[in-house]
Length: 204
Length: 388
Image (cartoon, rainbow over all chains, first blue to last red; front, side, top):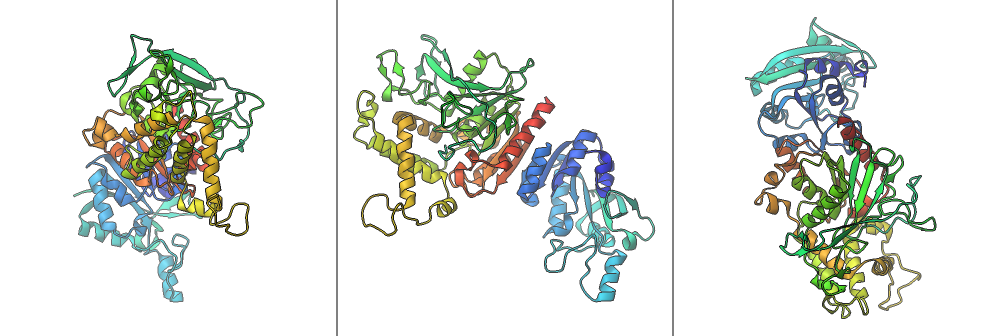
């Protein structure tokens, strides 16, 4: 895959990853990011994905992947087995996010976490104006069928970092266009105007 | 191994192939076996598909299961009605693409399709070995294959691929010859038999040994223990299917009748099917080979043999890249057994991928047409081939 084909949020994550590093992708989907990192940055990649069809896509394109639950699969790795553990747009779907972060910080030296920002103005407006649970481009599900069981804002994550005990080393608040191939960094009131937050985290 | 495949549904076959033979371990340089017995000479039947490239970097070794043989793909004769047992996977443009890879499959030692086994002539007596044949192990099968690979002057294998008892050989290879094996695909297999698997094998063996024609294994000049072997095969077949596949395939449907006839014939379709499979099997398989190979699979214990009980330790010398595949409905070698090997590989920092394919057909699923398996193997092989 050409770099320009990578989704904008994944491009930002990719830019933070050092070449030749060892990367664990949690909930890696069809392996687009890991494939790109392997080709362009020569990383040693490992993915974990629960869905068989997506696991198969990873293997077909040459990404090493394990079918399974991310928490269970992480248990087998020794401490600091990876340079980075990446949890891209999965945190909001996890039952115990603090356990996940703890595991990430155990198996990897650094972590990358990204999620849709529930503090975005569209979300706020949707709730304020319709009185119903927000449905937006980034959070397109209804309350009864959403996999996103944890709704959080950029500010929530910052608070969470202090509670759980990890450091935010780098962050990017972004807004993407419809195709999500392009986007921009939001610096003005990011918790209000960014659709996604991306954080590089490290141990305290 | 499945008997479902009557014709080749996935396009072009490799065409005509030829069974070849390699004989080694001529006395006094006999092949030493793990049981400390030795045997010689040993003949190994094998077939190859595709062309060895000048760098000799495109070698794939296919390892067959309990009742398989070297005839993985193609036809011996244009008049043959059935192709080799994995013709759906091995051929031009197929999952294991013979336009790209040089694919070898050999009949395991102890079997009866051209390689030395209990039905071969013992040079010391000029009669069939029968039960004088020494006990063999999965490791012995691998040693015989290694002798063949050396004979073919190949020193590196791009990928080892095998399901079930073939998967055990894949794992044994990776542990014995870590420097030779670039990658490996163990399918629907285990690092050691569960009590359940041993139990079914033992019932099958008892069926053979209880057949009056078995005669302590010396039946070659007389009537064969066909009934015992057929029952053994029927037992095996039950373990290769699943509750779901049997429900879908047979349910309680009756065979050639509309009502129960209150007799001990094959009234239900499932009975008729099993009897058919059993009867077909005795035409091509030797009862003693069945005894020896099932024993070898029961003895197989990677952790016990190479890790003093620790599977992690057993894989510690491995270097291969792995693709482990299990099937949701396989109750002979359930997914948890594949996950155990994956866990041990991970703890050794091996590059392993694992996929559990959702399939209703039980253990036999790895031999049935599956686009999913085709694509997994194709993609994995392409990656390891490009990386070498």
